[in-house]
Image (tube, rainbow over all chains, first blue to last red; front, top):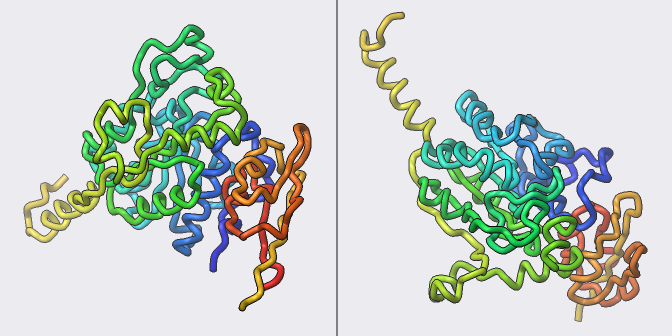
Length: 277
Length: 69
């Protein structure tokens, strides 16, 4: 059976992330999700953006591309349309995927491009010093909101769901098996799959918001979670400040390439209907 | 009755950043760690081989393997 180490560049370790950062847990889960499916390295492509979590491509021994801030999804859209047989993964942080590249996220979900997007949401821009991002909850202390954040944060899953994504799920690094299983399910979904991992940033967000060290922070994060099955019987007030985990949406619908290919096939079989250049 | 499985826990000190996740969250308290030190498997006989430390290690620094079936 394939081992996750086969998909990684172990000689590049130790990685650049801080002690206790949850990104390493997600990196291992991504590599292990490949191993669980026994995928050929050449059948996978991974695109990452800028930010702490954009660095996952440095440690993976697969086809990788590291693009500009917030533009990982457009680059991945190109790859997915050029070679529809590839498993295309996109790794982004909350700043990259939902704030600077937020527009690309909703349109990728609307178009239903065959991608699997893994968003590590650690509530801040870690690489530049812990400034608030679009997902930072109201009242949180960050480098740029020292008296408490004024704005409410985005719910990335609800955003993708409303935009039409066929598979949306959420998990935490406390539960590494769930990350693996959700990424695997996302990769097996034909169309846009979004997996949001509520991540820990003990260096910036955790320290300023009194979450404690890496271990206690993971535990506190887990205590805030509610499985989606249980959440359905809870009121909006009870769910205030809680994180709903599990498969939030699973409603398959035809992806962009399938619909596009149908037009190509129809026009190439109907003689004379293709306008000559 | 089948013999209880035994596990060997290895810690790669080159990769470990001493974040304390493995020792804090080990369900059987197999690992112990002092501030500023690497985790140590002080009760390896209590290990049930759940591999949560391995999967939760952000630094790929801990491994659990079966040494005796």
